[in-house]
Length: 304
Image (cartoon, rainbow, N blue to C red; front, top):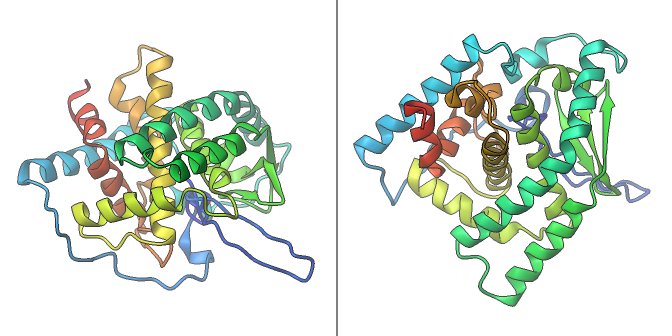
């Protein structure tokens, strides 16, 4: 993810493949992080939609988007916006915030694995991508890779990012600033899910067919340019919100439902809202995810 956004995340690092003299191949998956350090060219998000939302649907999405950031303002467990994370000084691995975040992420990893597997199957079915043997086999292989992830490793240099390396597909690396900036279980689950999807896709692009389908639908509904790496990052974010929603359902509490749901998106409540070649801007990401998941929009606005 891009950290979420050098992303990744929040959710954003990207999955990038680099071949060095020792064939060192990496997947930087942080859809949670900030673009300014990435070197990607800034681009316009606008495309030309073919399928249009009704005025009522658009209004609901805007209301839900506002609700996410409003909830963040009053939430003691609110995620830090990714542009704020990037501006903070590095945080030692042994700092109390990083230690607590790493411990929570490690404890939640088995739960997140199960939730993202269920959500991945659900999304493949929703997009009618479980019909052929090839599609079923690709999802099955991705699930096997997701199931094998076991380790959370905090890292100072990763700062506000989360990432995975393809030569070590059993580990998710979290920047210490990122760990400290996601104090809620819901926020951590959404990031874990995002990174797990990148791992499931792997170097063979096993989930490319799903990324493309989500990108096409997202483009048609929003009018944004969502293809290639953007489609992958958005799909990982979408599965992150689905996994976080399932986590909320499985762990009832007295906290208001909109507050808990907002935690999977609140890292995108930035002041500096910029996109690049590989990622939608953070606030465009919120709107795209709400467009693709109208039920989430209704729950954020109406609390049920």
